[in-house]
Image (cartoon, rainbow, N blue to C red; front, side):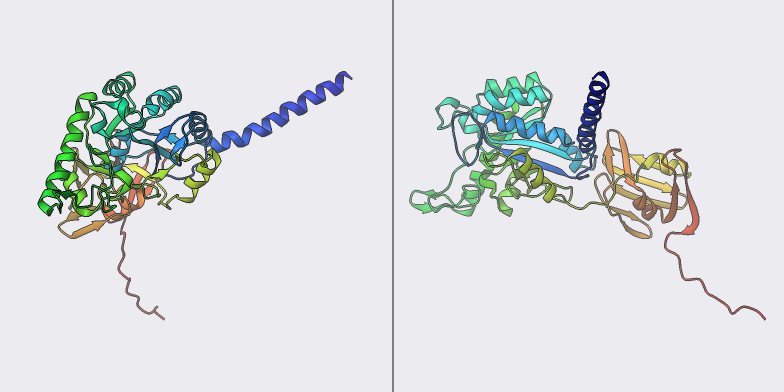
Length: 390
C-alpha cells in the first residue's frame, strides 16, 4: 500500500511537470519579432453591451492569456522609439483605448495597473468641459491626470476635439466638407477647421501630463492625405487607423494600423490566433551587432550625434540616419535590408547589413565578441582563368 502511494505521488509529480513544460515553452516562444501588435479597445463595462464593449473580466482574461503566451506589453513612448529605430521585445503589444470613456478609468485602469500593462487613451477633448454629460460618461481631466501621475505607463493622446462625428452627407468630419449657412464649406474653411481642431485637442491635453501630445487616433479610422498633412503641420507625428495589420517601421507614421480586440466575441484564444495570423515575416534580428563596437574592432570609427551617423573605415566614409536604410558615400548609395536602430543608447545593425555597409565579408563570434573581415570585397569580380600548363 505504501509503495503504491509513493508510486502514485511520483506519477502525479511527473504528470504535473509534463503539463508545466509546454506552458514555460510557450512563454519563451518567439511568435514574431521587430513588429508591434497595436490593440484597440473602447468601452470596458459589465452591464452595457455593444459591438465595441467588453466586460472587465474578458479584458483581464485577454491580457493574462497574452502574458502567459509570452507577449510583452510596451508603452507608446517605447513604440515611438521603435519607429525611430530602437528594438522592441519579441511579441510586442501596445494597448490603446479610443473615446476616453470613464469605464476605462473605473474598470480597465485597475487591471492595467495590477498587471503592469502600459496603455494610451485617445481622448475626445470637447467632452472634458462636462465629462459626465455625454451619452457614455467620459473621463475627467482629474482622472486622466491621476493615471499619469500614479504610473509611468499610462498616457493620453488625441481623438480630435470636436471631429468625432459624421456630417449630414454621411462623411467623417475629418475628411468631408461641412455645411455652413446652407452651403458646403470651402477648401480653405475645411483646412482652417481641421487645423483648429488639432490645436485645440493638443492644448487641452498638454497640461494633464509631462509627455508630448503628438499622436492622434482618427475617429472611425478614416483620414485622407490632406487631413493627415494638416495634423502633421499642427505638430502631430503619429496617426492611428483601424487597418487590421501589425505595425512595422515601414508603416506611414500618420497611418499606423491597429487590431480590434474590444468586441465581446473576441476570446483570449481568438485574439491570440488573430495576432499569429497577422504576423509579418521579418529578417532574423538575432544577428544584430553593436555598430560602433564592431567598426571600432575593425579599425574604424562611428560618430553618432543622436540622429545622423558617420561611419569611417579605411578610405570608406558613409553617412546615414538612425532609423534609415539608406547610407551615402563618395562611391554611391548603400541600401540596407533593415534600418539602423537604437537599443537604449546602442546603435544596432544586422550582420548582413554591416557587410553591405562596409563592402566586406564579416566573420563574427557572438559568444566571444570576436569580429574580423576578409580581405576580398563582398561583391567579387569574376576571376580570369588561364589554361593549365603542360
